[in-house]
Every structure is written in C-alpha cells, then in structure tokens.
Image (tube, rainbow, N blue to C red; front, side, top):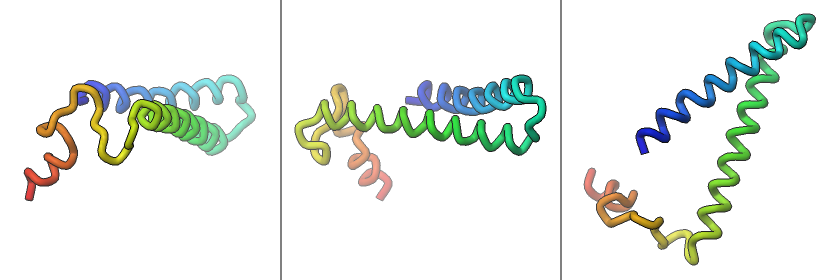
Length: 87
C-alpha cells in the first residue's frame, strides 16, 4: 500500500511537470499560465479515468460492494477494524 502511495506521489507531479515542459516547447507562444492550466486539466483527467477504472474493477469483483472484502483482506486490515481500533 505504501509503495502505491509513493508511486502515485511521483507519477502525478511527474506527469504534470512533463506536460508543462512539453507544452512550453511545443507551443512557445502560449503563456506560462496557459501551459499550467492545460497540464492541470490533463493530470486531473488522468486521475479521473484511473479512479473510474478502479471503481469499475471493484464493483465488478464484488457481489455486495458494501459488505464484501477484497481478496487477502482480513479483519485486521479492513477499514472497519482500523476505525474501531482507534476508538
């Protein structure tokens, strides 16, 4: 889980920086704010597509989304156990 978080923390800022750099080189007449705005929208679109895809995978793999647990998840790793442990 931490590896996924670390990779996401590198992927999305890296995608933003790459898009901004590419737009500045491809469209030198555009202002910096135009390049940043387009890059922000592109990264947001990629995040939305990935979130939708993961939601579809979860919904298709569970018979009951509210009560089912993922494969390999135990009571100790579920969110319900984590929230009751903190109380």
